[in-house]
Image 1 (cartoon, rainbow, N blue to C red):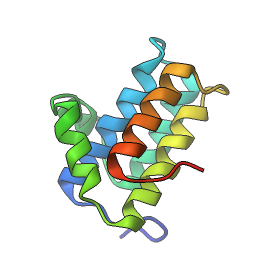
Image 2 (cartoon, rainbow, N blue to C red):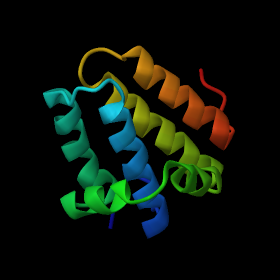
Image 3 (cartoon, rainbow, N blue to C red):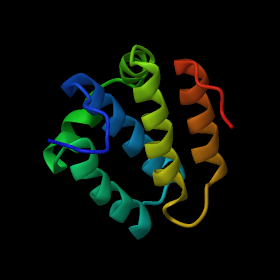
Image 4 (cartoon, rainbow, N blue to C red):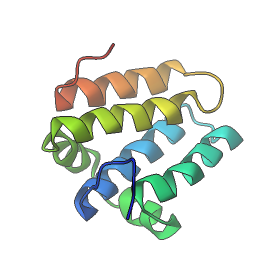
Amino acid sequence: MNNSSTSFTIAEKLAIVHAMDSVILADGTVHKGELDALGEMMPRIEFDSNFILQARNIAQEQAKLILRDMSEDKKLELVSILDEIAISDGFVHQKESDLLLDIYSFIGIERK
């Protein structure tokens, strides 16, 4: 049972992991900090490394549609998760920032 985080469905977890993976790969370099942050997310969202491979098999549009259908609370949790992943290497690359803005605007979240 997870205490502080929202409980995501399997489909939502796959879509979230897909989005995290996309952010990590966006700048063309996988940084140690990003891998560490991904590892820290595993117990928080309740997924394992097999999940990452499954998530990569989802089309980006399908993942974004799943994310768009989530509740407002889950979307806010998603923003927190993706922002943490993006900054985890110490720098938010322009490609990461563009991807985040694309995801956030698609799911209807106004970026602060």
